[in-house]
Each structure stands twice: as C-alpha cells, then as structure tokens.
Length: 330
Ligand code: TYM
Image (cartoon, rainbow, N blue to C red; front, side, top):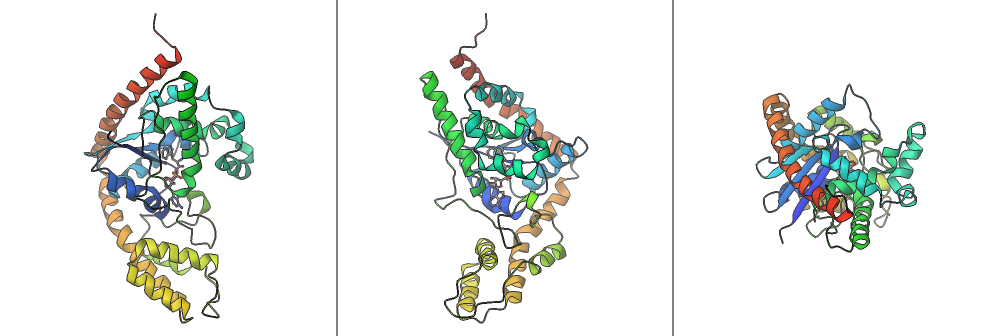
C-alpha cells in the first residue's frame, strides 16, 4: 500500500534550523515518491498566540518560507489547517475518546502550564487531540517530525488504536515517525541548553540576514576548552558539534573532532566554519522567500488548490468516521 505522508508546523514565527533539519528536510525528500500532505497549523497557534493582527501574516510567512525551502505544490498537498473545517468536526468527535488524565500528563501541556499559567485554556489541553486528527484525517502512515513531537505521535497511535478497538474496526493506521532509518533529530539551541525553538529565543531563522547568522553563531555559548585529551565534552560544545554534523561535510566534522581531542581546538574557528556551512543552506532559501512572499496570486493559488485536495481526503475519512460512530442521516 502506498504511504501517506503528512507533516505540519505551527504558524507562530519564522522557520528555523530545528524545523528544517527536524522535519522539513525529510518531508521534502519524500514528496516525490509518496502521497504527501503538508499544512500550516494556524488553529494550534491559537492555543498560545491568539492575536488577530498577526495571525494571517504569520501563516503567510510560514507558507512562503516552506515553499522557499523546497515544498513542491505540484507534488504535495499544501494547505492551511483552518481551511479544512472537517478537521474541527473530527476533533470534536475524537475528543469523546480522549481522557483528560492522559492529556494532563503530556510533557508539552505541563511545559505550557509553567510558561503561560495565566492562559491554561482547553485548546492547550486538547492540543494532542487536534494534532492526532491532523494526521488521522488523511489516515497518514508516515509523519516526519523532530524528537520534540514524538510524544504527540505516540498519543496519536494510542488514539487510533483506541478508536479501532472501541468500534471493532481496522480503520486508522498507526502512524510512525520517519527519518530515513535514523533516530529523530533534536536540533539544539545556541544558548548551551535545550532545543532550538521559537519560544526559546535561541534560533537561527532561515531568513535571517547573513550578518545576523554570523553574529548569532559567533555569540553561541562555549566553555574554556578541553584540558586533557579525554575531557568530557560540555553541553554547549556538544550542541555546536550536533549542528556542525547536520550542516558540514564529514571531513569538516572529523577535522574539528580531532582538534578537540588533541586540545588544539579554537572555538572561534569552529564557529566561523559553522556559520559558513549554515549559510549554504539558508541563503538560497532566503533568496527564494524574497520572491515568493510578494507573489500573492501564487500563494493564493497554492492554498486554494491545497484546501480543495485536503478537503476531498478529509471529508472521505470524516464520512466514514461518522458512519462508524453511528451518526447517520434520516
Ligand atoms: P512546530 O511548529 O513546533 O515545529 C514544526 C516541526 O519542526 C520540528 N522541530 C524540531 N525538530 C528538531 N529540533 C528542533 N529544535 C525542532 N524544533 C521544531 C518539530 O518536531 C515539527 O516536526 N505540533 C506541531 C505542529 C503540528 C503537527 C501536526 C506536526 C500540528 N499538527 C501534525 C506534524 C503532524 C508543532 O508544534 O511543531
């Protein structure tokens, strides 16, 4: 059976290296051989950023950046989540089989409760149900995402299994993360701790100016350098090597690893090389973005056509879900 691939992003800011290497790069590679869906999760964005003045602008920017980074509307169905009302209906139905306790235990929910205690809304709690519906509504089998989304994917599989068990059907497949045989990627931030993330303020955006990227990389947190050949690498240095591994050639990585091991490494040189190699990825994307963002007609065409195709697939699934659950017409 053909694989159905789906991935998405919240529309809360510019695309960064984490989004690119964690998810998008794989998706782009897969779009030529599978039925692919890619969408901008603007409803998810409402759980944390409900600002009508910037919502649309953010969606548009995210869309243009994704197109610039290689999504091909001829190959993939590209759409905006809120353009597919079937998702909202299925989210309501799915929530009847999702338990408050399991949602409260989700790491992302606990994290948001810490970060926005003044706005612990029900949308935040049911974020994983909506994400599961995004995936299940196309009965997707492969979902290329970064490490940070793995728990959500695990919940999606659990909801799919539960639905199938309750109704005695084999309707939803259990979607898997897909990273060409490798573990899911976690791109670290430049601040020496944690992942690169929009809300962490430690990102390299794909549309940052060249000099901004160089400056951010040169300011990345380091340590005092290895004292002995067997020194354990500190977190900030490991992080720089993790990013180097993604953007540089194996020779470059081997060169700096050797320099680290023999204690001759100069972090300034490592950072210069890192900035150089990051720019090889980002500059072409930034250039394409500058053209695409001003082409309103093209953007409209992409999402109109995407919504039509996504709705065709979503409504077919919803029709069956309603039938399975016993919702029938007179
Ligand atoms: P979001 O918008 O935070 O990120 C979009 C994609 O980028 C990946 N990502 C990372 N990967 C590695 N390292 C990082 N530092 C990093 N930061 C972000 C994410 O894993 C994700 O794949 N809930 C999702 C959006 C979503 C979705 C979906 C994704 C809604 N419904 C259905 C897939 C399928 C989110 O907030 O991703």
